[in-house]
Image (cartoon, rainbow, N blue to C red; front, side, top):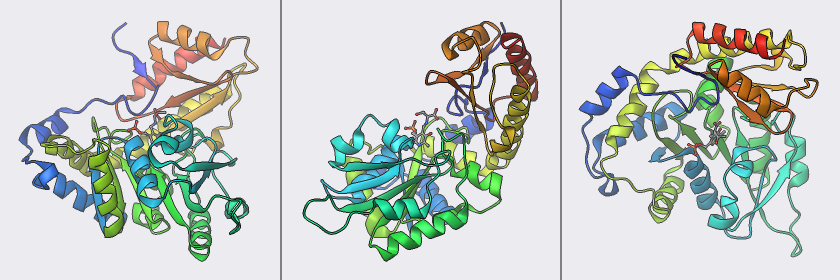
Length: 344
Ligand code: TLP
């Protein structure tokens, strides 16, 4: 087998020669002293793209979410989010440990919440209840299948939040994908948030890095907690250079990865034992159900691996595929051939 077609995640991309050159040539300094010119340039660039006052570079999407929760809340506050959101489902209970917050989980439609649901979750002012403080939304929604929030819903939730004195954080790990799919600029999405986190290491192809953006006082708090959580880095301009390169050269490639996902979904919808509606695939994530297949996801993953295709089982009956900029059209062909054989 030459090389695997790796559809497990868009985190698996490797830095391109152009990106490595930019990293090699990056000017660096000690970022804990605020002296890394490349990090400063990335932070300014991302703040500009998101239409926020300030942004700060952090090691991961998980840290970006958790720092945002920490900086927005006090221990004992309640955070409203969707039950399949990354900040709740995949971050090891960090909100409880690091910020002492309680989560109020709502069930979204393919991960997306409506403002009426959010409204119902807001606690009355009463000594029996925790204080509702923060709403976290994920755009695109990973476990929802790469779903894109309608901008109208975001504006409704934000207006509700402001009317009730609440804050809104957006986990925009894949905000770039939402933007590529909807042709709505990242700053238009970000205007309906108090803070937004974005990732450079998924979809965009950089090896490491996320940013949190928001108001100056908020980012100053995030910056303080970043140091406290051990996320202060030194000559990390090498990493920031990869991020700048990714924003300059890879954003435009995302749409093609969405087309690949749609192609895979259309093909899968014709296979026996697979349930998926290709019309629901909006970005680069394809989640399909195999409960009608005699094979379990783990067995399917094993059979695909022997055919050079890597995928991720998601629970007992679903499988997730994620397309990304390191997958060629020949790779998509190879994957379809392998799926055809496994589900024959
Ligand atoms: N998602 C990863 C896994 O952790 C599941 C993936 O392969 O999709 N927010 C969202 C919406 C994410 O999908 C992820 C990563 C994160 C945050 C966390 O980012 P990192 O891995 O940088 O901590």
